[in-house]
Length: 336
Ligand code: GTP
Ligand code: IMP
Ligand code: MG
Picture 1 (cartoon, rainbow, N blue to C red):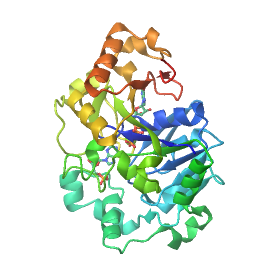
Picture 2: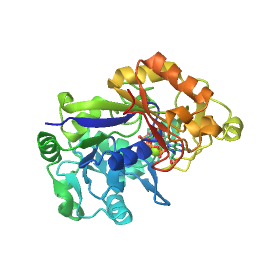
Picture 3: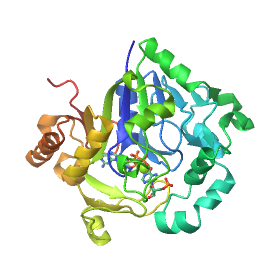
């Protein structure tokens, strides 16, 4: 029997999970990748073979053509968007959606784009909050009722558990970030459900004992879209000047930004039982480290930063992003 590797965001989303997951899918020859998380409010960027993909529903592990791709029952899908992404990524024939995955309808999107959700929370406007609200009220629609989803339907929990029983390599993809969690985040400025590692397990139908590694993804600085507290937030002009200016994958909004926060990193590790940290965008903080492939080659300042993260969290930084493409990464998992 094998155990799953689970990847989860350690901040406010957009930590670069898409890049880390697509790297792992290829490097570790993942047999099955299953997406947990909220739904198409996520936007993962995958830069692979000269092409930039922005995926909101398809697991970011799509880069490996051998990987079976699944969407868990805890997730919400927008059927039209899913079909578009299946086309874009060419994954037809290897993607499955659970019978009971929730469905976003046009009315949910409309409700998400007005009043309190738009004005106070600053949601992504993708309908996920209203769809989850209807789901809790037990009046939401599920995938098995949607004609266009019939060809994808499967029992995701059964597939994932059988793959583990057969010692296959399984990757569980979380979305959003720990501090956007409905339970552990900066309520009420959060998303519509829990987003920690435990929630990702429930989303895809595995128990906690089936997880071998929890990789918490952190970015070398913090970003946040929408409303809510962000300690140490910098003025927009400074963010752009530092080269930290990012635009939301889903909303196109300029992401707010602040320096790396060690206290939040420690809490993210605690809430998720992190066994490893993936640190992205080191090249943005330390320009000399762009494209580095080994820890030895990193600048002294970069090494010092990484050692401090390890000292403050008690968790090893095993993967380090040094550029936007899938293979711009330092992989320390084999180091003694
Ligand atoms: P959510 O599910 O929406 O939280 O998304 P995400 O965690 O997959 O991150 P998203 O793709 O929204 O944002 C991360 C951005 O950083 C993307 O533009 C990536 O291409 C980019 N990126 C990721 N890792 C690195 C890195 O190590 N260096 C550089 N320069 N860019 C990176
Ligand atoms: P919702 O998830 O669309 O309801 O939005 C609630 C809050 O979570 C808003 O602040 C959004 O900007 C934020 N949010 C939701 N999903 C993501 C994500 O994938 N990346 C970054 N922020 C997100
Ligand atoms: Mg994103």
